[in-house]
Length: 226
Image 1 (cartoon, rainbow, N blue to C red):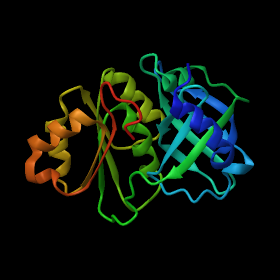
Image 2: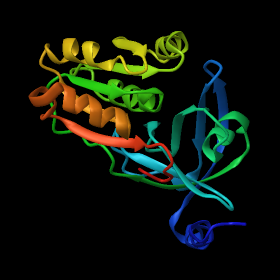
Image 3: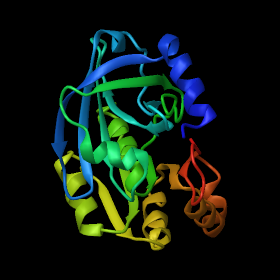
């Protein structure tokens, strides 16, 4: 049975959503795919790198993604991570060219447009799109990413395919040493990904974690965190 939130979203979406279609799907490994979407309603969206977009799934509700790009002409792209059997993971696995897509946004999520110093993106597989979006947004502001992953080699290879020049991937729970080393260069931290990992890492880092920005993307047992 569809949830009340999903039903409300279906009605409101007729007036609030931007509608487009999948134009291409590119496999990037066992668990990652790039999904390109385009359409006239996506034009002139006022996208800022770091913004979020919610994709509407009929009967389910919305799931949140970080666009890697969004052109003024109305083309955007997402890096989907398919993990588990959630509606979002199913979409990432099964999306194909021609599929209709309803998007809410783009909307503010992480804004670093006022930061001129180097950036350090900290997180996990769900943070990969943000790292790509910010790395491609400026040629003068270096972006480094330190991400934890269940499949370290896969995430490292996907990051290379996407052109991330400065990416460190570590096993889950092993972020602290790599983050400390990266912060020693003076980069501004951007904490993302799993809520519990962010909390534990910031407690361990102490004063070194006070600067920068934080946005939890997900937490165990919770839906629609972002």
